[in-house]
Length: 470
Image 1: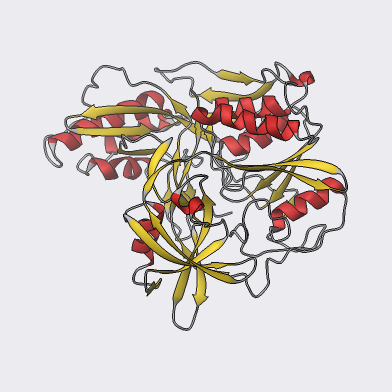
Image 2 (image 1 turned 90 degrees about the horizontal axis):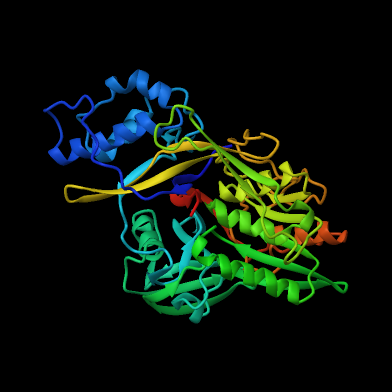
C-alpha cells in the first residue's frame, strides 16, 4: 500500500546536552562552514544511534559531504539498503524517509495563531470541465475562529474570496489555510450532508490545538455507546483525554468507538494512559509495547518496556472498536498492535493503516546561528508477543474501500471527510462501527449522494507524527 505521509514527527524526545561533535571525514571544499558543522552533527548521530548504524559505518565515507545540510540526510540514507522501514515509496515512486532534520520551530504546539482548520490531503473536484477544485475540511478545532464561524468537518471550500481554486493557485491557497499564512479569509463552503452553501469570514487568532477534538455518547436501542475522535497523542492533553473518557463513562456508556482515522501518532506514554483508561484491572502491569534499539547504540542502550498502569479505573471495556485510515500511524497503530498482543479484542474498521513500526530520539541543537531539530530512526516497536512486523500497515477487519466486506458498503474515496464528527447518518465508518457493535443491519449512509464530492488525483504532502515519550 502506498503511504501518503511526508514527514513523521517523533517517537522519543530527549534533551540535547551532549558536547560538541568532532568532525568526521570533513573536507575543506564544498558547502559553507555552517553546512559542514551541521553535517558533522548528522554524521555523529547516525554512526552512534541510527537503528541501521552497521551499514552507516560501512558506507559513511562515501556520503556526499559537499551537499547543503538540508539535502545531506536524505541523500545519505538513500545509499543504504537495510533501512527499508525508515520511510516509504510515494505515489511518484520516490523514496521518502521518516528520519528528518529541519530548522526548529520555536513555537509550542499547544497554542497557535491561525484559523483552526486542518485540510484533507486530497483535493476535491468541483468542476472538472473548468478545472475548479475544492479543499475538504478534515479538522475544526474547538473554540477556534473556524469553529466560532460555524465551519464543520466535511465542508468543502469551493472559493477563497472571489476566486476559484484551480491548478495554478491550489498549492498557495492550501497553505494560506493549512499553514495560516494569511491574516484573514473569506470562504465559500459547500456542506456535503445537505448540499447547502455557506459564506464565512475568518480572522486569524490564537486557539488551542487540542487532539481531543470530539466526544459524545450515542444511544441505540437503549444501549449507550461512547464515541471519541482523537487526532494526536500529545502529552500536554492527557488529562483532557482522560476527562473525556470519564465523561463518557459518567453518561453510562459501556462500549467505545475510538476514532483514530486522523491520528498519525504522538506520545507512547499517552498511548499507555489511553489503553490503561480503557482496560479492565486484569490487564494491570502487562506489557503494551517494547522499544528495541541497535545493540551497538552508544548513546541509549536501554531496551524499554511500557506497561499498563491504573487499569480498571474508568471504562473497563470488554472490547474496543477503532476507526482507522491510511493516515493512522505509529502510536495509533501501537494501540491496536499492543492491545492485540495482550489478546484484548480490537475490531478495526476503515482502510489499511500507514505502517510505522519504528521511532526516533529527537534532539534540538543550535549550531552557529541555526537551530535544528534532528530525528533519526533509532528504535523499532514490538508488542508483548514480539510482533513488530507491521511496517506495511495493519489490514482492517472491515475494509471500507472495497465492497468485499460483510456489509457491502464502500466509499472509494475514504477517508475523504463527508460530514462532521458524530454524524452516523452520513459517516460510513461510524455507521459501520455502530452496526458491528450493536448487531444491527447497516443502512448505507449517504456518502455517494449528489451532495458528496469526488477526489482528484492531486495529493498534498502533509505532516504526520510518531510517538513521543515524555
